[in-house]
Image (cartoon, rainbow, N blue to C red; front, side, top):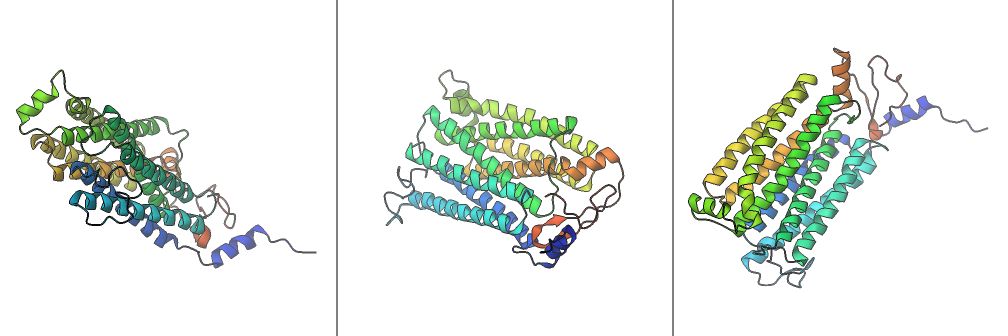
Length: 362
């Protein structure tokens, strides 16, 4: 009769086999993919701010009907460059997904993060194609363009969140636990939702600054409060007001996370969120005072993305299994974990954990 392998033998084999994809290298790659996508996002804002969105006409994926434009104008080069970097970002995310499936076991959170990243990078491309094909670019002032721009920003933030969580989990971050989190989970989720709404309003406000530029603060004030002002222009007053309200919610969420999950990682991320938010308020006021010059618009967007990443990681850290356990049980024994080769499994040595040799679900 054939002898069936036991659980201990299977676990020992997992330890002995070298990983198909090194978790450490994958984590480095994942952080790199996130950084590259931030550059693509800023470049996309430069396309909008410079009025180069129609640089390739209403053609997609071709540029003015050509694979590679010949004798292109400056606007065409800007738009075509954005398309090339966006295509490269798509390929990098494909690599992220393949690496997750080859380097981490079933039900590991890295696989979930990579799969979501793949979905959002595809929807990002489709929304970008829709903007071009429907000609919601350059000087187009149709109100529907605002909805598309808002959807684009929302999808971009979700893509960035998925990429950040993938890198976080690949670096050893614990799995999220959304149940039984009480007020901590509620206020962090409210802060995340508030930042999403604020980001959408900021994207439309920036579009209004591009389409309806002003030369002085007085002219901007008169245009904003005019009864015939465009909807994009009226957001100039509502966006800063919303920023103050959401900022207070974000600071409260960070303070709550630190108070209820007093872990070093949570403290560092909370401090980063508050510091970035204060810097953003200063930059935002400067942006308004200087009438939204292009460099400040790009810096404002980049800082918004960094705040979003810090808040997402703060939420992931505060709502993780280990963080919740430490707050409920008080001081606990140090976590000693042993990574199991290519499977990426961990053995928990805390009291009450699975016995050594029995694989933990991941």
